[in-house]
Image 1 (tube, rainbow, N blue to C red):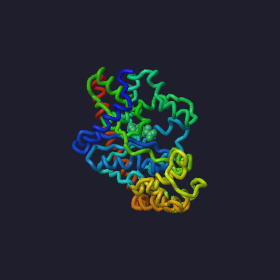
Image 2: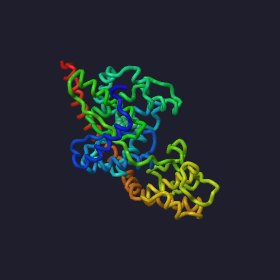
Image 3: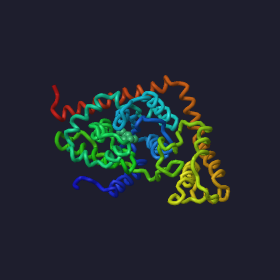
Image 4: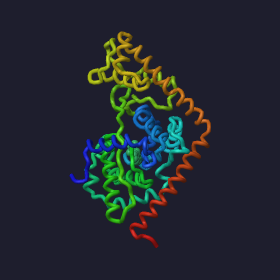
Length: 349
Ligand code: TRP
């Protein structure tokens, strides 16, 4: 297919950017986000939050979106949305996202960014939307019908990235089709109406995906995810009741021993140690000793983050202020971009 890059070329480009970021952080604007459907967990932390904080501290222009409109792509309710959004801000701040450096905002508060959806929808064909593998996978996983929003949310995601002229988007491999679509939309818009939007690249992580405590994909619905916001006791309890197997000798073998290996991976990422080394150290200690080790590793790593979170939670007015200020700035940026879009399209009256 023309214009569609392979995973290999996206990876190559991503590696080039990784190498350049520290030298020229001022050339990069990062945009990424999360759906506020619950608390963020260790998968989010090690998969993306930590990396965002690093980019922020390097001096990249960093923007984090709480994607509230994406919540209704595959569910029929906005129950708990406000609570989820405020808690997401808390998770961000606790993990080191600094609102003086990083803009934190929500979709629904930024009308001008949403308005980009109209011209952008005119730049994609139905066939392009229909063949997006991520949309199909999400539809199947959620059991939800294909609504207009689920079909077109990748276009909305292009609005997210392009309203602030984002040019780097930290994503997992599964999100690459969305980045491709964003590139296509920007290119088509620029060709048709004049140059407004940058070229966007995915920033692919080299950290392997952290599995859940049972070795399956980490997901709140599987009960195998440790939330950042959990207490040390809640963490201990969840680890204690996680599955292991009947073999006493602990070995790292994700293929044949997914449960035990999921636990070891969690300990490895929190201690920065090698999985096999941890397994050898536990050895005949069995699942009990392994679980104690994992609990200690997680609780030690997250102790300062959780302490900070608890302290911030005492001052929800501050947390709300952070979001309001982010939304205010996002509106300013979105208005400026929308004005450029109107100008390029000749819609100036
Ligand atoms: N789709 C992302 C998720 O499910 C969230 C998101 C929304 C996003 N808009 C984005 C990510 C723009 C990167 C860029 O978590």
